[in-house]
Length: 105
Image (cartoon, rainbow, N blue to C red; front, top):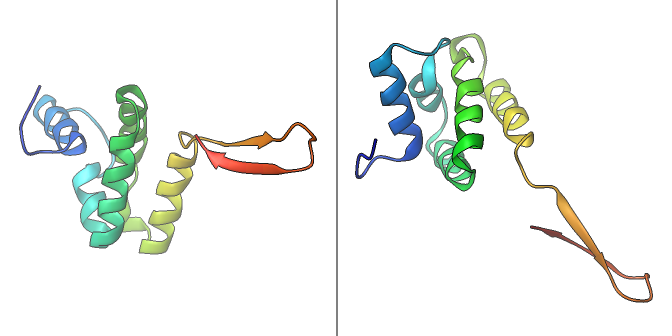
């Protein structure tokens, strides 16, 4: 399934819609419930995940019903789901063990 010009989230949504799969309100309703800036950030974050991770996240997000939440609650719930897949910071230290630097891998 390769549809040019459409991001992976939209492709997955279209594929599942065509197959009649999924519950909840679907990614389209969730995306429409978000401000443009948040929507773009979510799309970028989904694109940074592996295919398997993205499928798992989208599956969990599709179960949400944005009509029962305000925007802040919806964003917190989305971030809670994404937190499961975000990379943890790693810490490096020098030979003397005194300095540490946290970086995101």
